[in-house]
View: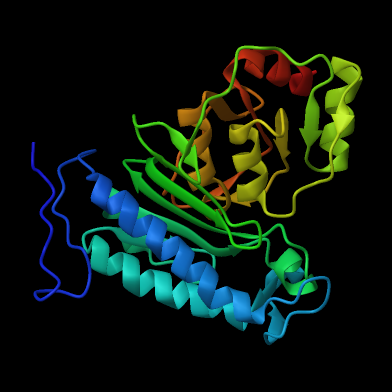
Length: 282
């Protein structure tokens, strides 16, 4: 096993780590946590609660909004995370895809602002999502929601946390599960499960899934066309909290594939998973 080696601040501006597979120092988690908070601080001056963002806004394909805040955060994280782990490739919503990532065992998968439409209209539920993926599965994940000051994180085998408090879903089965997601999927779930509490859809998908991990949502439903950057960090946080993110056949997503897009999915505590995917398959 190769231990993490921390370079002195005089030698390099960033933390440098030389890693064997899955040998990730807690120092890397701390550095990514700090980076997520810094990213949030970059975005916040552009945010206007309840009204239109101060940032310049334009639209990509399929009328997907992007702002100058997205680009500023993306640029910061790309440079900063490359300094932490130079051998890792990069995949982000706001960076042109480089297929050389497919040859790398390690890749940073980032959504600089997950929920840009919410951010741009003054809704509080947007987040910064950062995952480190090794051989197709996340090994480190951080999601930071600046308006709520909620920072969710997980390192493989080390549990899931929110602001330093351990997230661990209980074994209790809710009578009327709290469900959040696109209305057609929620209605489909309710038809086969029975009474539910239909919660408002959380516009940041990463944050919606993180709230399943913390237990404030029992079932998080995901429409088709989610991308790696929307779900990779949340996937690990869910897993370490005792939940699963799968498609309706029960298969967990694989990451850093040529096409980083996924079909319909469900996030739910392990105890409810068989019942949830059974409902969505019928």
